[in-house]
Length: 401
Image 1 (cartoon, one colour):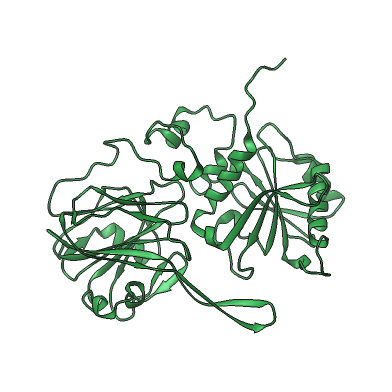
Image 2 (cartoon, rainbow, N blue to C red; image 1 turned 60 degrees about the horizontal axis):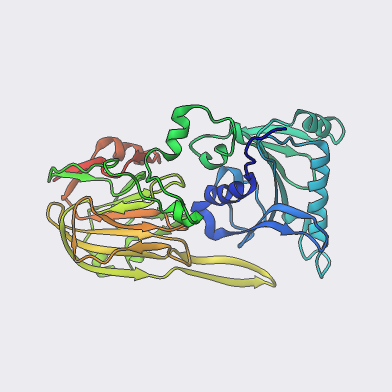
């Protein structure tokens, strides 16, 4: 008898699939073990886009339409021909089990299969019997085309380890010591009470040291950094929303003080450390919270199109000792901020300013003209629309022009 401990993979999958879409979580709802009918038929995961016409940017969600049915197989399980028809049937039943005819439009449905093993027999059947085509569009992502429903297959062990770290980790064959340590080595050892508790976990002391040099500007968070020079034509793209500086701050007078200055956008990925720090000593001048906005119009019955949206955000104006009057902002989800800032009257370099709960994930720094010179590699990368990977406390520039 096999006495190995039974691992509950589906709860881990439920958490992982939501983490994968952390940067776009406000666009969707997630319903684990969605009850398909009064009978014991359940979809592993039903993902419904809140605004059906809005595109999902995450690689595993680009195929998504309004209603997206996901079938997940644990690492020891295999995806079979029968599984294909079961899930295909679920998709048809889900479409038909409504009060009105075509309440769910067939063209609004997709199917996603997620498994660890490449299903050779199932795919051969689909090619030979159903005359479907299999195309690998990205590492671990296969599109199955030629059917009425868009279908994709995700092979977890083949997915990109940076882009899809959490789904990649749903394996029982992780033996590489370095790979295991990458998931846990930098964080406090504790039992996590909830997914949000894990998301906001603290890093171990000494893992992100700050340089004491007064002329060094440090990154406030683990993130991917984009540099913007500020002028009248500057458009900042933050969490899929475009802003002019005056709109971002909701203060035109304050925005004018930063003409000729720079804006640094630090985008936190799902696996980044979600706590952030002050980058210089100084006096806190003011703190402002801005609620998220989403307006729609209704040009055609039951079809809604976004015309204006802004994310919730908070910003602190700081008279810093070495970089002038600067602004440090945190940007959350569209309607709910998920930003937790501590109450401070002074800023201390390297001290934790706050943290993001699930749903918030961008830090913005705004500095005046001639106060700092950002490193050339960051400027050059940004000019090519390439983000620069930085860690909390890492040098990104120096005082002066």
